[in-house]
Length: 333
Length: 292
Image (cartoon, chains in turn orange, purple):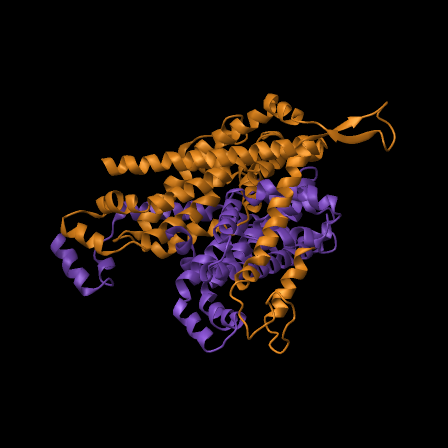
């Protein structure tokens, strides 16, 4: 609520041509730009919103993570439960909570399946879209990008229904073509592939577009020079284009890594459909959700959120480092 | 080979394509197209079937009850599906417009002015990009519940306004598309900073702002966790949350499955339409984000 009025002042202040000196901070004064304060009023709405939407909740969560509920007496009556300082006990609990770390491990396994396949496909499709002598490029670009328009949850519901044994088109195709029968998509190992497949389907197109746009911005003369030197399309793609879009690939890698650790929608929908194929604590965010709401332990949920946020931070730095090394390795060769 | 490409290069790009078709890349591309479209085609066909037909018909054999499914969905709980649709449009449209405005202001401010703390504020917002909204959803809910704003439209709308990525893009757009000389000339002519921004900056940034709008529109349209946490009354739900509750109800009464599938199909139509209508902007946008 607090942010809305500040927005309106900005909206309203802009067309106010007649009113001078609305405020001493320079917003309404059209004759005096006051360059010193002007930039701050441009970025003020964003900064205020950022503080309200990102920093304050983060700070509040850090605070909550150091609290706990204390039950007094028999634990009956309205005032029997109260909030007391807990120090790091929630964190100690999280670090020893096997179920939590299992959910982290599952997210890592999920990511190890998802990210290479998704980014590999995205890169391949981007290179194909940018290559010569390939037909249906326009159709390919539109169709493969289209899943991005489908909300993850809706996509997960659709795939989840397609996995259901009763009306699975995948099983019937597999049966018709390869004679394979009755795959249980919610089985204990296959379920990773089933969930990762939803991520691949939904994420390939977006990453493909990022890489494709990056390819389009490269200087085309390089390819002509390579062609003159006798390089074929495949060599141009792999030896020239690929190294040149490394920065964009690193960016997609980092964003995918972060997205992986916080995966929620896909397994949550599959949990609903699969009748136990995916547990309520399958990924870290599902564990946080369950502890905060179902188990009603806000403080533990807060500590888990902070741990996950820190893990994501560390992970993105590790990925950045690793990919950087890869770049330098590539240069040395 | 090199001689051929030399001559075609000299002739321009148009005739180059027809000359030769690489079969393997084209084939791979078509497999990708089939994979991407498969669930969409399936859900379209599934939405034409009754529940018994879903079970008994072959996967891609259409049924005949698209209209009755549509009516069933429309009459479900007094047409609440369309309330969800409207809510989604409100959250996504409102959030994206406000987000584009805030991003335009901030991006222009960052790109066109030098001021104390510029680096600090921009880095702060970039770090916000690394701590994505989903992990913040639980903390945001806890805070919103604390100040009594849970289950209001605001609780979903306000977090949808700020988009670190939008600000980042807007800065790149302002830097690339609004020349300093023009701003300087406007200043010399006596235009106020606001007027320069509105009359010169905004029109030049418009393609970029449409992109930011689209990105945020899709992001809010797709959002599930935030409204799922924030909202408790059904008539404030967006589509994603509404369909999830429908699915939830469907696990105990499978008769609802055909409604879920029909609803899923209808709910993806607006965004697909938006994609085709505004293709141009999808091309421009992603470039700026990845290149710089």
